[in-house]
Image (cartoon, rainbow, N blue to C red; front, side, top):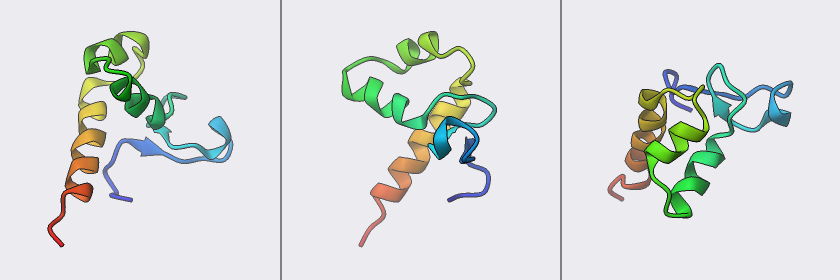
Length: 70
């Protein structure tokens, strides 16, 4: 995992699910919101402990990893 990615994985927090750094909000929740056609703003409204720049960093990292030329 990229060193400066705002994600934390700790077996003591949410059973080791990747969460946004300093929160108990699973990263998976961000993708589920987007899959359900909800906006980033709606996600952030529901999870005020997640910083906008952290959510964007996760999305940008995911995009860069998935769209790497073969």
